[in-house]
Image 1 (cartoon, rainbow, N blue to C red):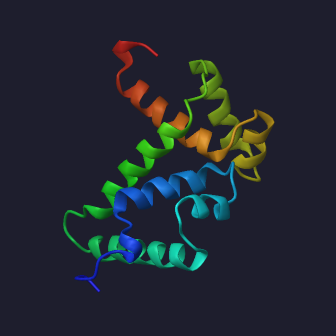
Image 2: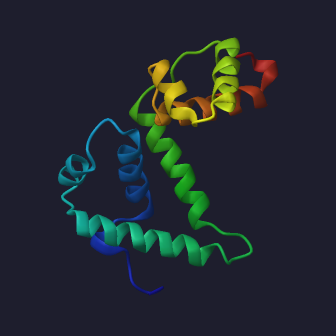
Length: 137
């Protein structure tokens, strides 16, 4: 398996881009796949290929595949929509509300007109902002 290339030539960065579009949740996966000229079965093959590659690579002392996917996924997701503007106080309130929610984040986010993809973007934004407090928020 290791010498075989990815199905349909879908490299890791394209896989991350398509995965990010699917994670956005604003379009059916079938529509995304049609736009990428992929069938459900082909997407399943691509997903399994990259999941296996990440699993195999995880055994390495310094894995590279999953971190590269994570970075590419985040960049692709951030390119899809801007980060929702929240004050530091609103971000804190959101995080505390999610932490207190017995049924998970979905309801809390929906009440604020946010999706999980928005929360992912916000989490990355605030992680960067809080890592550089001297630059302001």
